[in-house]
Structures are given as structure tokens and as C-alpha cells.
Image (tube, rainbow, N blue to C red; front, side, top):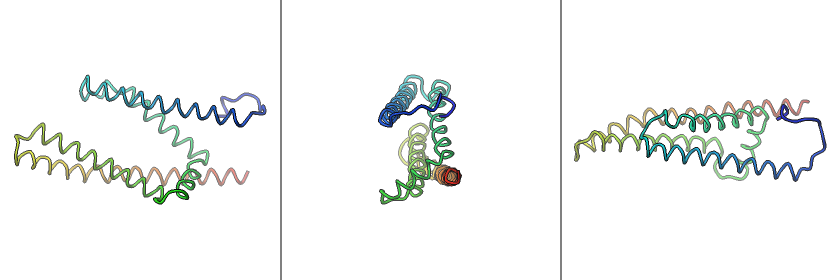
Length: 169
């Protein structure tokens, strides 16, 4: 963050690395507190988006900031490359699988919720579950897979361009 730095003074790499580790731990701590707050408010107030809006904004904005910042600094493509070297599954395939998982989980949630809330029991509950589950699958799996795959492709492209620009300088 060049706009927060003062003069170009020599720095100890050990101190910088430890400071970055502390910042990472603080970020994880804030994310956990926000997630816990969302869960508690959901239990106390029910599905009221207004009660958890601040936490959702904090979670989304911090994630978006990290993703955008790492892509424009050229870090994202390096992270993907390091991941692909050490993992059996490529990062792009993991993104697709995560999108599939989110879509499937959301479809299951909506299917079970519809069966419990609107079904009178027996075959009607199964019928409601089946209809809502498959309709949700058709909506949310392409949505989440598309968002994850497109986001990865765009971030990787921008990151590679930024890294190539840094090499040219």
C-alpha cells in the first residue's frame, strides 16, 4: 500500500513477514466474528437481511478488495501457479467444484425448506422437495459455476497482465 507508506526506509524482512502474518490472523478473526454474528442474528431474528447487512457488507467488501488488489498486483496468477504445482486438482477445476457445491447446497436447503414449510407430509412434501430442488439446481449451479469460473478467468488474465507489465519495467 504505497499510499500508506512514508519515506523509503530500509526494512527488516522478518518484521514485515511477521506483521503480514498478524494482519492475516486479524483478517481471519474479523471474518469469523462476522460469520458468527450472522449465524446468531439469523437464529435470534430469523431470515431478516436488514439485521445482518453490515456483516454481509464487511465480508463481501473485504473479499472483493483482496481479490481485486491481488489481481492488479499480479499476485493472483502467481498464487494460482503455486497452487497448481502442489495440488492434484487445478485451481480452475476447484473453482468449478466450489460453484457446484454452493449450488447443490443452496438447492438442498431450498428443497428441504419447501418440503417442511409448505408440504402437508408424505408424497406432497417429497413432490415439493423434488420440484424446488431441481428448479434450484437449474438456477443456482450455472449461476455459481459461472461466477466462479468467470471471476477466476478475469482475475487470472488481469494478474498475468500486471505481472507482465511489472517485468517490462
